[in-house]
Image (cartoon, rainbow, N blue to C red; front, side, top):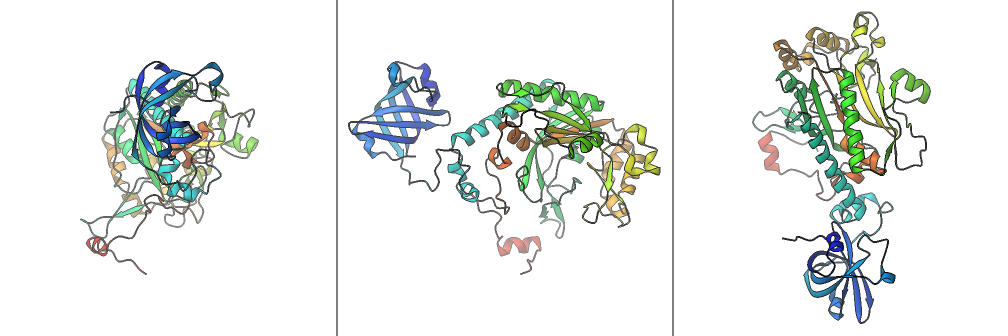
Length: 463
Ligand code: ASP
């Protein structure tokens, strides 16, 4: 097994090492040939003789060599390993590489994105993207560690499930065993995490994959995304805000020490105030918008529980309802506003909280309804038919067996990483994102099924 990354060689002056990696660049000085050897950790200069003539860039090689300190004037301060170089004693070419279809030395922003995504496995060799993946992995590790220490339990919930009402279009998966029926991929684990509270778990989290068939944008990938989904029982909204604030403050301090959080505690804006002052519910509160190291976290609170329902709303019930939930239908009304549910529903405030970072909505959540009567009332106001209500019967039933007061939040991991890394799109922090046309380019998905597969499912595709 490989046990030395090129970055480790800085500490090994005078020792012989065995390195494995890709030939990043070649500089041919006739008698001496230099290459930069690249692995996941970085690059190191290797000095070789005429046998290096056989090399092309991106060949995969094994090198045995001596780590030598460079003479003072040949040190390269721009390179992490710039104080040393490797004198090659033995070179093995493990595999040869064809010229690459895309350059991978620069940032790559200027290259057509569809081509980058088609050759994503090459695109990911780019140090910028490798770094993004490493930091993302460190961030999830940090989150798991932080929450586990605070008595959270990580629990997986089904991906083949039933529609979850987050307001987007569902992906459907046909059932073979029950022909004519379909699973929906979850838009979030919302109902499962609430049922876990009924189950007595008290503190749940999951690094959860969510699926929504919505058009892609810079801050929203097509098809799927990852969120840190969490839920707690016996808490107030204040507890949730504090916990989230502590988590992200600690994470930034540990993984992004060069960044500074603009204001602590994070500013809190009432929805109406944000709309009036900034014309948006997710204002960019950075003092200096050109400062790439400034992180302006904020909360938007006191959202209205309902918006006026429009034709386009997903929640069309009887066709006569006037109200659509602003967050989702399990969000609790503000306790002071409960009487308004009967008199003026649009005035009811929600116990909803949106997490804002540098002008992006990085997450949302709420305190949930735990009173079946209020839940029924909300279903009614959003115009659910008896049939639609029956789709959520399991929630209402579960709530009759002792439901703790509970609430949660779900910060989006892709969007958070995009914002904190200052990347222009979520696709820069996801290993294999879909293209704007909804294609997973490397695999050329989606694809046409075999006739036999369709037959088994009882499905015929209209031409
Ligand atoms: N399920 C919600 C969402 O995905 C988050 C939450 O309410 O916890 O936006």
